[in-house]
Length: 392
Image 1: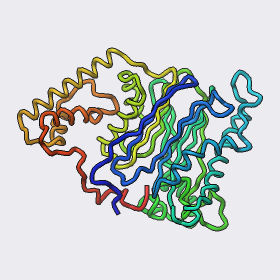
Image 2 (image 1 turned 45 degrees about the vertical axis):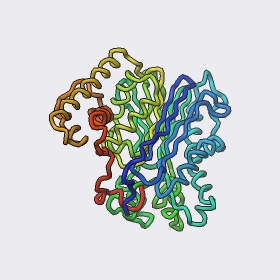
Image 3 (image 1 turned 120 degrees about the vertical axis):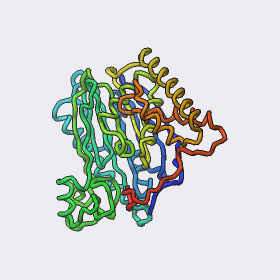
Image 4 (image 1 turned 180 degrees about the horizontal axis):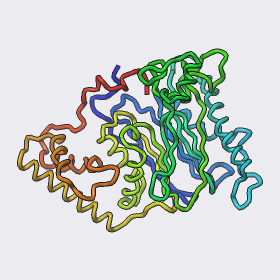
């Protein structure tokens, strides 16, 4: 039941943009998976709310139909709900506590309405498509962040040089999630819903939403988002939204430390996001990978000193690879990488380490061995990987 390619597809989709006092970049890669099931959404300036923005990542499973539909329709579904009235009766752009609650209600209603509407998609209604998708998103007003999470994609806010806030993953083994699943007549086996699905909340996945007499939020899998509001502050640096293909190999602190460092080296956010994807692949991620990075005025800026140290580190790594290969030209790339691990190099990227420099090692190795067939992305034995169960 393995769902992996013999070699990862490493082509990336990247974008960047700016507006409303923020900059954003994004990157995604299919990786080892047989299909690209991730989707994303990045909108700076909402209809009739030009100083609001919206960013989201959707991690599909068992197909890409639901994740793609969510990326195209979730925002509009939210802002078209009756509760979404943040633009009225505001003072200096500040919304009242009542309006904050109305936005939260509109986000919840938007998720539930979209999930109900997708049931009527022809391929879903016929049973041909059984896909589902996690969703993590953030509505950004001039004064607040509105986080919404459904599944195990995650958003992390860096404030004051640390990972200040993150959404919580919805896994079947979480006590409250497990209790709901069992009340609906299901079970949690091998940390999955009925031994199959790895998330306890998702959009789509209608085969897990058929328990008679129970509402949409009481099913084996719930489409209800967990919504958190944070007040914006001057110390806000950046926001990261990513699928579990990233979080499987980097924790909140590691990724924030890595992004913070990369922002001092690269002026464009596409490059920073691309480096997150590459580092995750080098760390062993076998999933699709998607990341959205949103930077605020308090984000780190490019430093000539940091750029110079990075340039010197790249040159040193290049030199080390040459020395190692000259001593033994039969070594594989993986063996060369392991040899450099023991070199105790200074100024490796925080949070990324030597994995963030894997591409430098590979480029040097290939330059020294142009005719040698030694693919660093050769397939590995995934027979024991827990992802070989049905979905996600």
